[in-house]
Length: 552
View 1 (cartoon, rainbow, N blue to C red):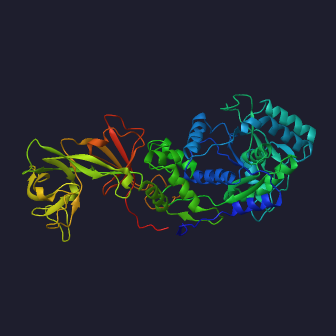
View 2 (cartoon, helix red, strand yellow):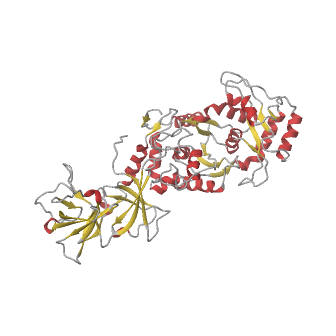
View 3 (cartoon, rainbow, N blue to C red):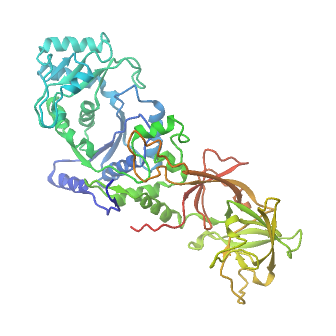
């Protein structure tokens, strides 16, 4: 893997648009986001969505959402609906909703035109044979024995293909270009294949379907797209894209431009591999918070604002690089630090009994909702004789410079009092089950106490009013930080990518709803899981920890 990069913002395609408008080559900017509905969108698609929509918005143009549904075997209405939902959630509205299948009739007629011009022919070779005779980077391809069929014979065979007379794979329609071209994509590419498959949009009308490389430029031209923005793997396809638009005699001439796709550390960005994770049960569906899908990021607790800011910072260029996932995490921290309610949660609880606090008494203490945003106000939290603290905030035999609770040590309970550990209670196996402390009533927070000082402050939740909750803590999906080799990437999934703990939150959070976001003192930012939470079962997903060494 190449060295991880932290890109600086740039956008060379924006400069092209500015030049096109200034020179009068373009009157209105028209872009499109053209996903294939064969899976859920991921963070890489978010970069393309932001680029296309924001570019058109800046120049008062329009953006189409178009589904490239040319392969009915892999596509489904579920994916169509999920894509529409994700685009809208990111904050964008398309000005035209289209499907490649809307244009199947016109595509067929354009293919017939190519046949009449002697620029397409029906080939009887199977896919393996076509691949074998395609040639290499140093050797030309071998022409098909059926390359010189007459236009009349090709028209007849193509019509019979359309009528469903032949089996899948028995024949294909190929463009007739140059089998010796240095660009392998121009060596008579297949433009139609036979598929006896039900289509989600056209039903059983068609028995032949256009290949993506043929359909895509036609769709752009039909819709009047001016700037067709693709990722770099389509750069070698650009000569064929231009050939299709020209030879099919399209009245509108779009131009294709390429940019580097987004690659993130610690995950996979292949839709095929993501689908494999789902189908083999390695994750809890496409919206599993460990997935880089937009739905997974949304369920984890990412905001559209954070993702848009991240995509803008990435910029648009042709340089390959792998982006550190901590850069994405930086933007969600920046977005939530002034928005999220700062509260206390104990995710691995240990009971504390304050022996000198009056039994049966509860007092309500004031706590700031967000110390960096005074406008969020404050809240009241209960305090009584029994509380919960984090288990790792106590050690019976601590190392040097351990400033939390241990026998004989005193700490501050956040927003409350000083407490001192006096006694440790253990079970028959020697496990600590409870600690007993005393408190100093003169040390109440907010009273201006200026006496002795303590070095440690720990958080807590009142036991009598605590609300049970489940906490899901996430680590990277891929152990070694790389998109692994295809043969082994499932074997190298991080077995510790999900840890589930059960603890307590403040009583004021009992009414928290799916999608609500909080900063838990010392633990990080959390989101109420919109899928698994219920009124009687709070489930929190950790979005991100509080701090990172990453710097922009």
